[in-house]
Amino acid sequence: MIALREALRASRRAPLLSLLSVVTIAFSLFAVGLFGLVALNIQQALERVEERVEIRAFLADGTSAASVAALSADVDAFPEVASVSYVSEDAALAQARVQLGEFEDVFEAGILPASIEVRLKPGARTPAAVGTVAERIRTYAFVEDVRYGEDWVTKFYDIRNIASATGAILGATFAAVAMIIIGATIRMTVLARAREIAIMRLVGATDGFIRRPFLLDGFAKGVAGGLLALALTWLAALLVSRYVVEADFFPPGVAALGVAAGAVIGLFGSLISVGRHLRRV
Image (cartoon, rainbow, N blue to C red; front, top):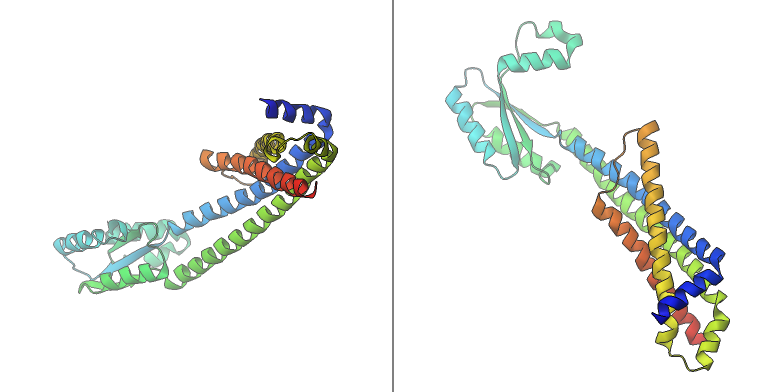
């Protein structure tokens, strides 16, 4: 309770400095939050595109229904496969006319073969995994050809890896800069109370007694800054969704983690700054 009273008293004595600390933490975390929001939406967009990865096996003319059923059952049992669907000759022709309406006259002869469409599970859509499944399907005698857009899958996988690596590096850089700025702000708060710390030392106060008010103060400012940063990030996502493009916001767990990050940064920033100052007194 004594530490809490001291922390509240210090904030009331220097309200502008306390406000500056909260705002600095908030905007530093806001910058990290904005980057995280962009990274999240890019990742989700890539996942939606990845869901379109599929294998299409074209069947020979005259393939019996029993053979098609056996093939579908076998492929559906593959651990990498999420679903298998049969596309008849008529259905293939109807799809082509809808998707390629400008070339409708090309399909008047009804020359498209029947096929099965194979969709893969998340984690099994890498070029190697897709290629392996395609080769296994190709071994069936009545399968004339197997297509899965090999070049497209490879390029997409490379783009996703580059995006993930770039996001991780930039995210770590933003977080490091934010921590440096927040640490400097907390250090200003400690230096502003340097005389108070010296007096407490002279009257015999222990390091733990001196630290506690600063730790509570840093923790409180970190939580306040994290909540403000979360509100600003939510507002930015709302404005982007309304005026630019539909954007998803962080799930509750990630949002809570952002507030917790502010609290931890405030706590450890105070701990480090006070510790350095106590070693000099």
